[in-house]
Length: 235
Image 1 (cartoon, rainbow, N blue to C red):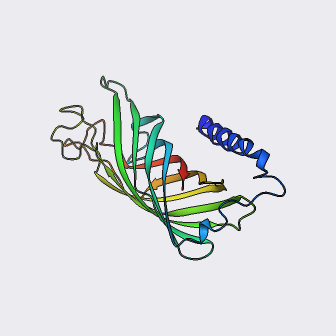
Image 2 (image 1 turned 135 degrees about the horizontal axis):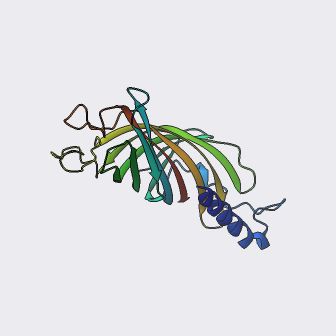
Image 3 (image 1 turned 30 degrees about the vertical axis):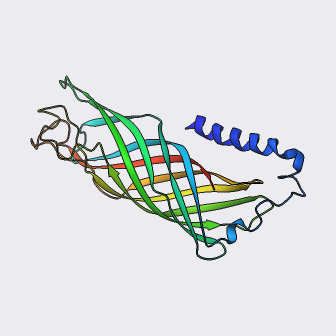
């Protein structure tokens, strides 16, 4: 994630430097897209990165300690923005999120102690964007709301579980809440918005093995997704 923060800073710095000669972000900037945010509705798209994790709660302690090894996935999607008030917008950001989490089970005697959990999510967030007053060509904002995720790789309907077929199973649909921060940067022909957002599942997503004493799921009280999104949005 440190690399992702560096990418944001580097991209923003290069963009600022590229137009520094026209005094876009100086003390007396040329105001770009002055009436852009007055539109009732506008559209855009985003590209980005994600880092998904699981939060496990256990029935008994000490119990099975499941280590989650995160990887960096990618995001792509569309943005629809509805202006409600001067500083408040309603946003719908449907997107495709690909990720992988590797689970390692720390239990003596368990031979097959690793699981690759590959997930492709169709993500449907409905968010409120709270913007500050615009200063020159910069406008920070906060964003928050709820989302629903459709996991195409959940294996929920698979007949074989961890014991009988090595299938780690999750629920197909998940409800989440999201919180984030970003900044709008106004250029001559477009608005660029880097942002970072956290997503937190509200539901227990684990589908248990048929054996209630399964070493993979028997001691798990709940398993909930949490993750970080870094998105680069263009309007």
